[in-house]
View (cartoon, rainbow, N blue to C red):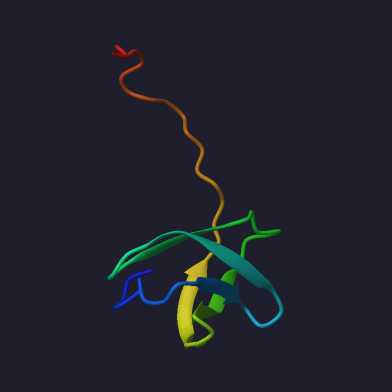
Length: 86
């Protein structure tokens, strides 16, 4: 997520919703202009149309913000095939 003052407050939480399904997103990093959170695997692929972010009990709602759950990527190969670990 990108925005302003995303590092404000001492506690924050986020929920992604499509009206019938809500998925919690746990923050792994919050900085002034960006925040990164991780969800558990979604039960199926869907698009959330509401993002609820709570900072110290304030609850700004971003309606119309789209978040799409997609399939995990499949890694087919890695280049280079060998490396030297030091």
